[in-house]
Image 1: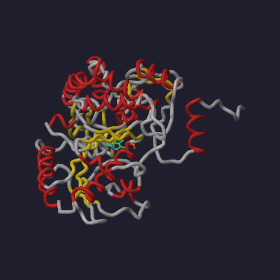
Image 2: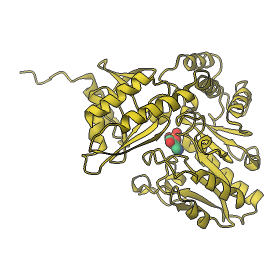
Image 3: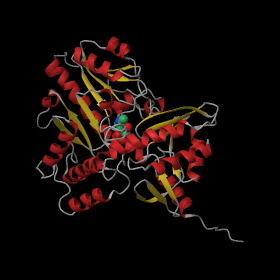
Image 4: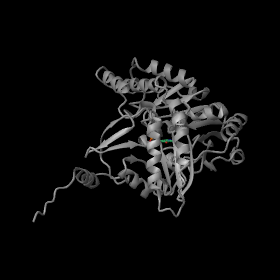
Length: 404
Ligand SMILES: *Cc1c(COP(=O)(O)O)cnc(C)c1O
């Protein structure tokens, strides 16, 4: 009898990962080895359509050939200089991202959380130096059920116990109001309020779209009370909702806009704080920085990631195909479905609480070749790369219909 039954490559890799890695994720048991466009393949050669896009970091599709070329060309020329010296990719990156987003100033960082932290630092300093808030008294208003990253300051104002508990003490000066409630925002503003930080659509919370007029009302309140309006577009930005920035749906402009994730098409961590007002001018040499922020490889990759988004009409495609997919999903007459909502290709299917849970649905979708991830217990987020075709959208809807 063979006591050493052959272990599949998948099971072996999962076991080795579990033995050595921190257990801070609970991934679906699919081990991926290759990606191209909307598809990825596992170590057994099985193909999947990726409906997560690395939490919207691969909006341009996996291994986009033009971004890949930009990466390899720059990688063989110059990768990192630190900001102690200048590099020839930084100025064109600034020019191109500002032209595209109509921003006035850029602060380049790496991860999304770093962009958020940078914006919080800028807002506080602006509050003291420009608004005249007494030293140490600056307040920043955030929303309940936010997701802005994982640093200590950021999880300190999270309302998710799992993200927060056990990691204190936390920095003071953050006030939480309900998302989508302009009256609550107004009531929370004091003379010491320096900023209001909000996601245009709450992604991690389950694709929560605020009531119509909310962002406009928040923008007006911030203007009226001399409070910086900071939009975290790390997930909603760069075409995901069918506009370059989600703020465009409401016709508003933030004082600071945070980008990350798809800013480098999934090749590289690149984030940025974009600013439209004087907030950026409070920073002087030595007061903030990052070894990797603004490095030439990051800039070259981000430049091409932005270029293909526009050249290949991925934003328009997200609007068209997203509307189509949301319609097909909404037409699924399954009693387990409570709600289908979305903007562009940022879509959620919410199940009734007694439907057995979103995780089980995701596990069944995997067997049909569709990768999606539950957010919380009862919601499945659908956020495929923005190059999705109508035929592929129909196929996604068919898989959901079959499983639900
Ligand atoms: C992912 C995300 C972040 C954090 O980005 P990291 O690169 O993971 O640090 C912040 N805000 C929003 C809205 C996000 O979706």
